[in-house]
Length: 299
Image (cartoon, rainbow, N blue to C red; front, side):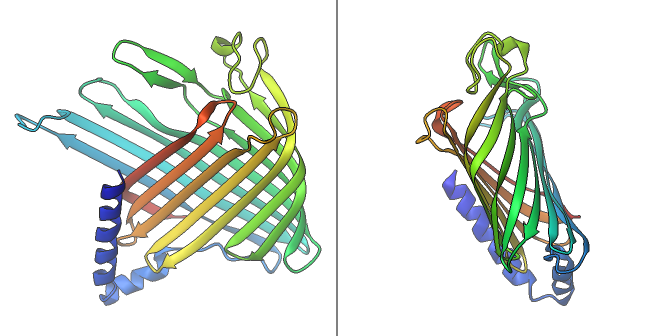
């Protein structure tokens, strides 16, 4: 997986370098990336990206073998909606993804990506770079997830199974428009397990015969956005949570990364890499990588 990724990055860079010499393409650079400017005056600011990646393949009498027909697509929405009034700020971030893959060998679409992640942060500025803030976060998925085998598909997750609701009060550090760091020593997190198929089992950290579990711990989240070049834009986020009530040394980690490299106003190469560690779910590091070329709209 690493070698194809490096090759795609190399080819995309070469294309961007050559294309940048063309005046028409240079004009497109002005609208290729719309950055969210920091709110220095009262009012609203909004910006985001909507991505659709589609891939398709077909083989007939192919000596090398492989799937006869494949079709897949992924969608991703990153959106910021921010407001300021005097020293009061309200920042909202939406991260929503859904993707499916179909191949002739299994005859139906299978989910390859599914995420709902919404963060809202209300702050009061008490110095140039520092804010007292209250943060809320909701994280779940839209559809049931399965472990796929040759004989049977085993359901392992669903809407609000797991679901996570986090409420936190702390200090927010914003040195510039590219970086924010929020830290809280006291945070409540509610783990949901609403699917009745899992009611009798210990899953996602929720005990048997219960549909929810309340955790108390410390929380930190950092977000970084950067225009790497006129053609490349990076967004990254790192969340850390330590549960005081159970194994506080096992820190939960959520690390998401998205790099978008524009061919022109509409088409781009998109690379997303997510890393998750939660020992209540799986005592291993989870890793997901998706590479695609498709329609990318700046909102």
